[in-house]
Amino acid sequence: MKKKVYVETSVISYLASRTSRGVLTLAMQKMTADWWSNRRWDFDVYVSELVFDESRRGDADAVRRRMVILKEIGTLAVNDSVTALAKKLVAEGALPTRAVDDAMHVALAAAHGMDYLLTWNCRHIDNAELKPLIRSVCAIAGYSCPEICSPQELMEGHAHD
Image (cartoon, helix red, strand yellow):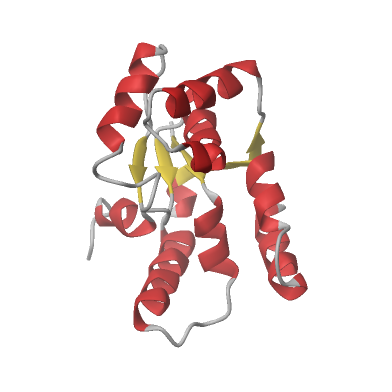
């Protein structure tokens, strides 16, 4: 049985964006494209309506490219359990008040039993200082927290030839 991955908006954005001139951004784009091409088939991949909403923002050409990617991915529903967990994540300080959407991404992945939450959002979601508290809040609420990681980290487990 394949493991389940919730793909947060930042990953879709890097995948669909025009090639960057910035070295770090270019490297992240390449790692994202490599994961998408080489590893995504090893997993059941999901997004949420929140990812769709966030992906509809900005430049029209970029929106079109993101929508093409999203149309072939399963969608997780926002329900009362998700909303309650997101509120707890913020209330307990696992994520800041200004990061309600980030709390929703974590809650969506946890409440739907995802094995991984794939993100490039290192400010709030894939943050080494916040992840222990995120895991704790999820556990106290009765959920297993998905492993929060970047495409680079999820690529690492793949056996290289």
